[in-house]
Image 1 (cartoon, rainbow, N blue to C red):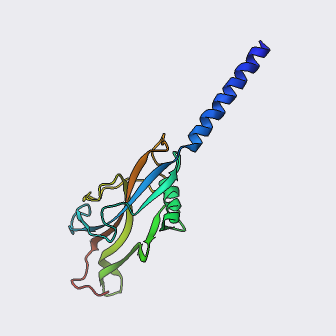
Image 2 (cartoon, rainbow, N blue to C red; image 1 turned 30 degrees about the vertical axis):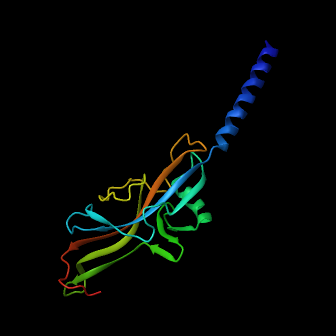
Image 3 (cartoon, rainbow, N blue to C red; image 1 turned 90 degrees about the vertical axis):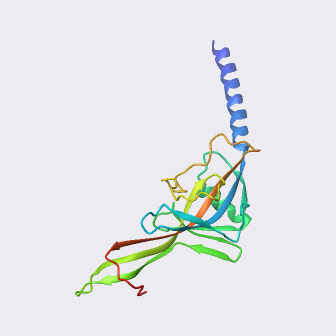
Length: 190
């Protein structure tokens, strides 16, 4: 009985080592597309249009060596070798705050415009305008309704069971949005 157990244990260990080494060796390619999106409705923040960007319709970079179990954030950090730089929020490190490629750097930003104050100097309304990074899976740059995943790049895993010849895609979308709150002033005073 003891000899049989030792033989079975040795076979099981060898099988596990073979399986784990083949899984660890599998690394796919992630295509990263970048686009700009601009909100076109003042009442519906999900309506907008894709605007031309300097990168065209092709992937900006192809990240090689992406493995299952990795987050999209980790895969994007690997894109630095291909020239795509990313910056992440210091307080919330899963949130993307800027993307750079070549001489282009797009950063999250935003401010209140048309600020309206009451007699005591309290702000009672404004129009917030800003740009921020969003994302989604796939390669459809023409996706014109800004309904994105409700998870961050640092929380979301790339596809499971990736093999060496697998290729998958994601889109980074630099979105411009505006919305009014309270009672904004009639003119932009910023």
